[in-house]
Length: 112
Length: 112
Image (cartoon, rainbow over all chains, first blue to last red; front, side, top):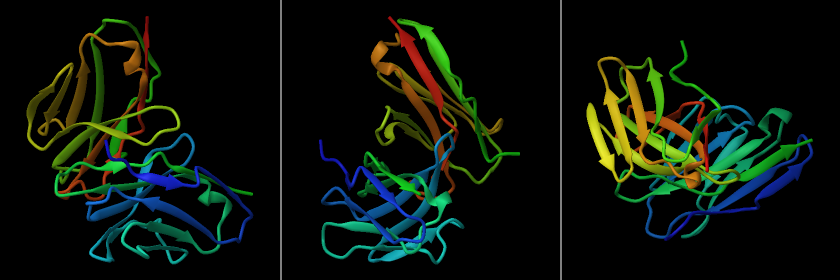
């Protein structure tokens, strides 16, 4: 079965540093998402992306966050200047025409 | 009042038991309801998707939605040890699984 691939599985960074989380969505999918899950808390929506632009974003997704689809296969989430509270598991998801979201296994981001 | 409430458990039942998992919600704009299963260190995996009140069955899984009471349930029949996971309810006001709002997740263990 096709799957969403995320790299790295674990990223450790210093506060204030920039990080880029990478995702390869399922190849024929057109809708892309980032969610995050802080330890012990709910999975939270960050942003949705379609047709090379953001279609919806949450209050969490402030100016420190950006998303990009730099080529036909990758979808990235950039955090410009990480804070301690950005430590979380970040999930990429994609979907095709069906209303079924496929999630990746996540990138555990630890900000020290 | 939280937008989506789900008892985090943990819930432990013997193999073969019927499991009932529930969520309540406060936002009457939610029209699309999903149940996800999440194994440790993995992303959420969609089990059930529904958008109307009533029951939807898929194998050993039945999803039930009561929009008048703002209450959804997932029933697992003939539970197996492999069903041990965290179960997340999720809902959206937007078609296409856009901007999902998740419950806390219920940690379920099926004992052989």
